[in-house]
Amino acid sequence: MVNNQQEVPDIVIGRLPVYLRALSAMEASGKQFTSSQELAQWLGISSAQIRKDLSQFGGFGKQGTGYSVAVLQEELRQILKLDREWPLIVIGAGHIGSAVANYTGFERRGFRVVAVFDNDPRKIGVKIGAFVVLDIKELNDFVKQHGVQHAMIAVPAEYAQAVANQIVATGITAILNYAPINLAVPSHVRVEYIDPALHLQKMTYYLR
Amino acid sequence: MVNNQQEVPDIVIGRLPVYLRALSAMEASGKQFTSSQELAQWLGISSAQIRKDLSQFGGFGKQGTGYSVAVLQEELRQILKLDREWPLIVIGAGHIGSAVANYTGFERRGFRVVAVFDNDPRKIGVKIGAFVVLDIKELNDFVKQHGVQHAMIAVPAEYAQAVANQIVATGITAILNYAPINLAVPSHVRVEYIDPALHLQKMTYYLR
Image 1 (tube, helix red, strand yellow):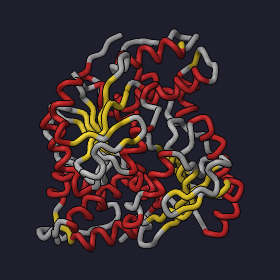
Image 2 (cartoon, chains in turn red, purple):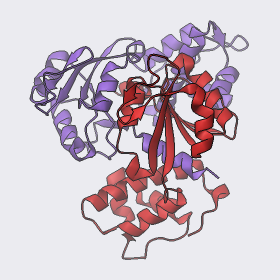
Image 3 (tube, rainbow over the protein chains, first blue to last red):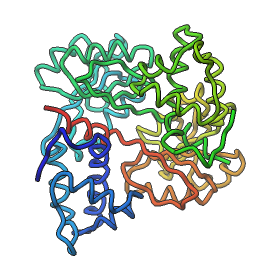
Image 4 (cartoon, rainbow over the protein chains, first blue to last red):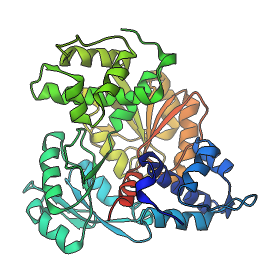
């Protein structure tokens, strides 16, 4: 397996988790082997694209026999560094933050929520699911102590940039932002966005 | 304004809501005029790309004076058919469904949640936020009566395909899927996906 980070386009990296998700679903349905054609059909991506993406990391499948679902999953997990569990923190203990903190689906996929923070005295100390909401003032110490590298922002849009600044100051470089606003961060920090309204708006264009 | 649906690439349509979001934030911060350069800086997209995207729908800005924030927003809302309010239903009254139903950010952006459905007798009839959870058996009648064209799926992965089939049967053609699974739908139906773990996994690749 070759994992030459510099050379693989970002868009290809973005598809690897999609392949991994499909393979997990295949495994859950009892499938042991698959092919680029079958993956293509599941995902609505061309089989040539899938083969090309995977070939960037060396050859996984054998001509004729296809891919082992288990082996390809394992390889993708290694490439994506998901062969370990990453601690994850949530900033914002509102509806979205609570839902995310209570979501059990992260754990099978390489992540575990370890803390929820807020700055609202009415929320700090309150229990949501398994978590007692921590004071945002404890953020820096907590991140350092627990080696946290991933944070989710689930605060109202008007506070999101300030929270992002606090997160960046801790040294965290991976931020998943649920607030509907573009964040300005230093170039070594990556931000991904969850904004359901964007997707709804895009689909609406195509309605008759 | 030219809105020639056939000719505009899907990836361009996907960026229009991002421009609209940035313009709304600019308006909220008191800005009246902007430029493709300024938008580019906010969004991390090149100004040439922004000009090219917008030119697909005719010219909006004047050379030298840039774009009126209000006018460009209005034009984008028209193109995206967001110059009206679309009713939206949520299937699944768990943590995510409840958070989405209670989220107030959709309304400024063209959508209003009008009902939440579930098939669990323990959830049907229960109040979450402003909604009494409806029986999924009422889905078809409700959709017809209220002219609903958008649905969000917030059920566990193992039920998502069955729910998608029920939604498609009502005539709905725009589905936002929060379940971490690819859905098989007829080609006239569009599905967009919200899967935070995918984004976390992608960012993890880049961690040192």
